[in-house]
Structures are given as structure tokens and as C-alpha cells.
Image 1: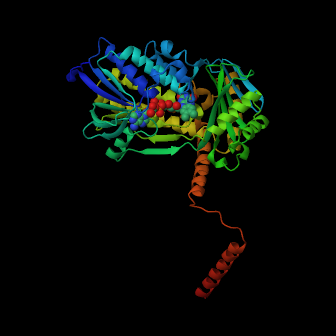
Image 2: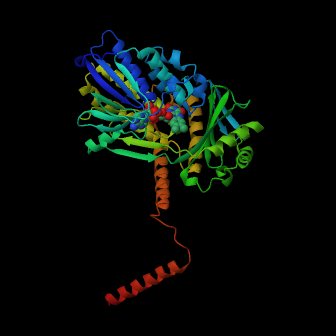
Amino acid sequence: MCRPPAASTTRVIIAGAGPGGLLLQALLHARNASPDSATKYDITLIESRSDLGKLREEELQAHRSWMIGLSSHGLEAVRSVPGLFEKYLSDVGILLTEAYIYLGSKKIGGGSTTNGQEGFIVDRNFIVAALSRYAYENMSDSPYYRSKYDTELLYVDHQNHRILTRSKGTNEEEYLSYDLLVGADGVRSTVREAMVKRHFDFELKVCDIFQNFKAVHIKRPESVSPSSISILPASLPHFNGICLPETGDLINLSFGFSRNNIDKVADEIKSDDPKVVAKYFKENFKAFPLTEEGYADLADQWVKQRWNRTGMVHCNKYHSSECRIILLGDAAHATSPSIGMGMNTALRDAQKFNELLDRFNDDLEKVLPQYSIDRVPEGNALTDVALNLYCFDTGVGMRTMLRGLIQSGLHYLFPSLVDDGPNGILARSKFTLAEVYQAGNEQGILTKHREVNDRIRRQVFERETAMIVPKPRTGYSSLSVVAGMVACGMAGAFMFQ
Ligand SMILES: Cc1cc2nc3c(=O)[nH]c(=O)nc-3n(C[C@H](O)[C@H](O)[C@H](O)COP(=O)(O)OP(=O)(O)OC[C@H]3O[C@@H](n4cnc5c(N)ncnc54)[C@H](O)[C@@H]3O)c2cc1C
């Protein structure tokens, strides 16, 4: 296929075929297809893994990952590509109609409880496969598009605006030049490393989310509605959980604990014997009963997986004009799944970047800095809210949750007198994440939890790295302190005689 003339094109390399990168390529393709587009985007997609879009439906079932809650934020972004949701996505997930919180076995909530906002539950890999299928069916004839799967981005030569890649199949290495490099390559982004090297004022923090979790896909028990989401706070001792619906009449149950509680978590749930785990769930998980096969299947999947951990990323800018780079999605702001907004924000980044191309007539000199101005507050609000809306101290967290439930009840009854809490406004797309962050701070929730969480994290770090070691309580040490004080006192007394 012959390439378009260079003068009219902007060569874009998108690193990472996750949801963020794939939505951006669809949006750029739509720009190319528009009759009034003055600039054509010559897109090359680089992805280190295989292409899920090539799999048949049955094959894809074997590549299930974790379930994602897409709220209005993400859905609006997807719908900015005409037909994408209706033709490619709507069939692979489930639209929510009910939402519940279980306190023990007590179920609170009901139908249409998502504030009139949509919620769509879908497997991460099903979204990726659907977006890739969209590319095949709509973009593969375009002279402005090519994808390189099973190809790893190894290095960004930011001074010369080119990248080095290696094909996994042939081991061949290749340099590719770009006018814009999009780092949509997730939490361990290679693109981001160029910004660390180039800019001394670039702030980057990568850390873990301080939670260990496991997730299983089991047959839906009868008492769980097939289109409901259920929050399961303290559903096992020291664990919070969530239950999401899946296609195929399954549910996705996830349970996690914060790492400060690792010694308090029961040995049974750490066991690698499925019978022990099944018995523990049967006795301790009160929200809803499973069938005997359900407990057995849950336990079987539980013992076969390690504890999952995932990372958080904080950056103070998402672009480099000198390197001609932008960061998008998890590469910019990976976060805890606790509020289910990571992918929503990744998709929004792509949508907002595209809107800036409209606003500045494709002038990247203007678009890039504005992208940081607009998205850095959102990304950092996302990571802070996801981390600190919940508290690593289970008691404090439970009290905040109960107060939050009362507050949303009062807000429902007296909207002009009582403000909604950050949880209540989170899913509503008319509020930005920065506004949620502000409300959470003003209402004291984030400030309080941040203080507790930072303290707990530091204490665990000090213990794990042996910066602070527990002292033996023998009485000897306190005796020597007293003796030392007496000796100092006597010495002082002599000196001042
Ligand atoms: C358990 C769990 C539950 C979650 N639940 C939700 C939820 O309910 N709602 C929500 O909105 N979000 C949720 N998230 C977050 C969501 O999954 C991520 O925010 C989202 O996938 C980010 O998309 P992305 O495109 O930025 O990056 P990714 O999905 O991480 O994709 C990055 C891509 O880049 C590729 N790549 C990486 N390095 C290279 C390289 N060097 N060369 C080439 N390719 C490379 C990777 O293979 C990958 O395909 C959850 C996350 C987890 C872990």
C-alpha cells in the first residue's frame, strides 16, 4: 500500500494497543476520513502482545482478564466514534440495572440506583478485542494505518524523534520515525522513560496500590441479579469485595486486603488447599450463598492464582514538546481499581486529545501543552481519590462508609441542604474528577484517610525494609535508659557545682 505524501501528514506512533491507544487510533482515523481534514495522521500501532481482535469468540473466552465498569465518562468517550459502541461493544458486556451494598448479609440498594447514569460491565480483553475488530473492519484499507502486534517498543531516541522496536517472531529490530509519539503503553511505560531522561522538572512516581487481590469467574448464584453490581465491604475479615456481572451467566467476584493487614488475614484463605478455602468462604462469606459447586469452583480458581498487585503512577505533566510525546491512560495515571475509573479516564484522555486537535486546527505546538493543562488535574485527582477514598484502617473506613450512606440518603431527601459525597458524584459525567477530589477534600474524607494511609504505608515500609526493628522488651533496656539519665544528671550536677 503506498504511503501518503509526507508534506500533508503527521506520523503518529501509538505505543500500546490497550483501550486508550485503540480508541485514539479510531478517533484519528475518523479525522483522516473527514472530507475537511487538512492534516492526515499516518498511524502506526505498536503492541508487544498478540492481537486479540483476530480471535474467534470461543478463543477469546480463554483470554478473560478482569471486569471493567465503564461509567458515563468512558461511554461518552467511546461514543465519540460513531457506531463503535453500538456495533462492536454493546454485545460483549452487560448494561447495569441494579446496584447494591451488602453489609454482612443485609442488602441495601435496588434498581436504577446509578443516579440515572449508565454503567456497562465488560471484560478488559473483550473491549480491547472489540476495538481491534473495529480497526480491521474500518481502517485496514486505509493507506494511513498499519499495526505491528507482537512487537515491542524497546527504546525512544527522543532527540531524533524515532523509536527502536523488536519483533517477537523474527527478533528483527527496526527504527521508526515519528512526529508524535503516544505513550499508551500502560503502567510500566517505556515512552515515559524518555521524559524522565529529557526533563529534569518531570516528576514521576511509580508505586504499588498497597492492596493484594484475587478474582474468580463463577456461575451466577440465583440470588444475584444478572445485571447488578454489588459492593461487598468487609465481606470477609479484613477483605473488601466486589461482585460484577459477566456474559455467559457468570459473575466476577474480587476480594482484596490492604497489605498492613497481611498478618491478620486468616491462614485458611492463604492456603493452597481448595477444600480449606471453600470451607472458609462457606463459613465466612455472608453476602449471598453459593452452591456447593460454586464454592468448589471459586476455591479451585483461588488457589491456582497468586495474589495480584498492581501499580500507581503520578506525573506532573503528560506531554513533552521537545520529545513530541504525550502520555495517555495508565502510562500517565495508573491507579487502584477501587473506584473503577482507570479505563474510563484512559478513554477520556483519547477523546479530549482529539477535541484539542479540533480546537487548535491540528497544531501540535498548541495541542500538546494544553493537553497537560487539561488532563494532569484529572489524572492526579483520579489516583488520589482511588487511593484515599478508602482507608487502610478498616475501622475508620467502615465508619466513613456508613456516614457516606447516611449523607447520600439525606442528600436524596434534601438536595439543597445536604451536599452529595464524593462517592455519589463520582459516576456522574457532569462532574470532573478534579471536582470529586475537591469535594472529598472539603468534606474532610480524603484529608483524613490520606493522613492515616500515608502513616500506615510508612510504617509497613519501615518494617519491611528493617528501617525500624521491634525492640525486645526485656526490662534491661529501660533500666539502662534510667541508669543513663541518672548518670547524665549526676555529671550535670558536678559540672554546675
Ligand atoms: C483488577 C482491575 C480492575 C479494574 N477495574 C476497572 C474498572 O472497573 N473501571 C475502569 O475504568 N478501570 C478499571 N481498571 C483499570 C483499567 O484496566 C486500566 O486503567 C486500563 O486498562 C488502562 O488502559 P490503557 O490503554 O491506558 O493501558 P493498558 O490497558 O495497560 O494497555 C497498555 C498496552 O500497552 C502494551 N505495552 C506495554 N509496554 C509495551 C511496549 N514496550 N511495547 C509495546 N506495547 C507495550 C501492553 O501490552 C498493553 O496492551 C481495573 C484494573 C484492574 C487491574
